[in-house]
Image 1 (cartoon, one colour):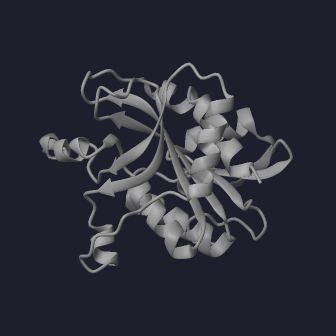
Image 2 (cartoon, helix red, strand yellow):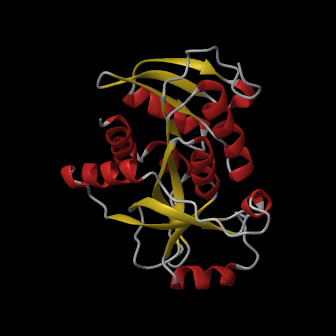
Length: 237
């Protein structure tokens, strides 16, 4: 039983979907998993386990930002022996190449966070996705009839939601960063450390170039295509 999840041994599946919003975790459990049961509500960060097409799957909220996400990822990997962790989150587009509600499958992540600088003693580390999960996610999109475009590319995991120096992201965009979110860099790093599989799939919920945005309820409940891609990729054998 871990400090921040407090689930009993065996309550969490080897495959976990990992949204930031605990209410999105609840929505996923209610709409995608059969027989979903709540295993944790510590600090309001909900976790559920059920099944999808015969596969046992959990969904666990992570909170916002790399420090919060890292707490839950560490405990899932270390205390509950989770093998596959798929972030299903929202992101803000940084380029007009990406449209509202497009889906980004992150092959890697750059960051302005100090977490990896501390971990690697000032050296640069390139956090990347598990290739098997990445490939299966792309293959899943090819089988699906999706309304919006799918992109495979870099995410920028920023430490500030309200960025006071947005111009500093311009060189990242010039080098291929498609969108900003707040978790993927640390997730990929921790998965590498524990020798586990991780992938981040994000839906564009707001656009930093066109200034379009979705509502909180839309972000919580309307990202079904992303969830289906994540489930297909995580459960494929």
